[in-house]
Length: 223
Image 1: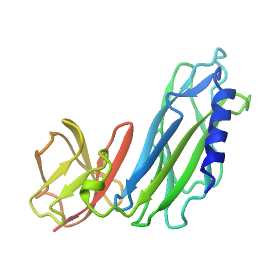
Image 2 (image 1 turned 120 degrees about the vertical axis):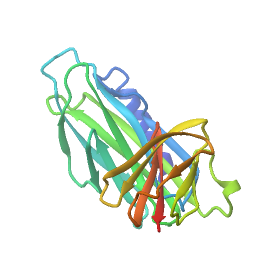
Image 3 (image 1 turned 90 degrees about the vertical axis):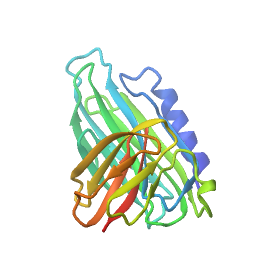
Image 4 (image 1 turned 45 degrees about the horizontal axis):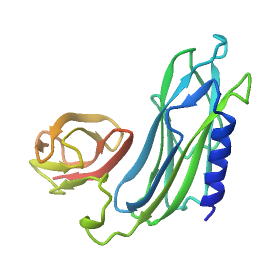
């Protein structure tokens, strides 16, 4: 595992870009104890263009991975564009003073392991104008719900026919339900312990997601 070298690269990049004209509001996410049975884990940060040159609006991002298990899937989202397993650089426009949301995450498919990845965003006119977003995570075979990280979620009953409960370590939060094609089918602000009624959903597989600085998802089977 090259976690130390990844951290060193992140720190060097951060030091070099302390005065960068583009910058993420948070550079590094680390999760050392997560359940492999969670559907996925995503880190979210905002990239802002603080350039003094209004013409410096053309940028690109590229994914770099180190020691990510072959069974996992890595996804990068930039704005509304989400790319699974990106292998090339992707261009985007970011006007002076504007920000764009980035997400960097892994889907585990029930496989334990350790993964490190980082996204580099840089100006096409000046490559030194750049910043990085990194994610380092260990997904473990945790033996009980008591061992789960507080930031994970539980969804029950599952399968469900009428209503489900989505427990998360917060008093109030928003729950989104997507079909397997990624279409948003339901979005609801709930309090802890409040039920979500899913009787109007067609039978099938759905993804239940809570979004914040970190995002968590569970697969839900609707009977």
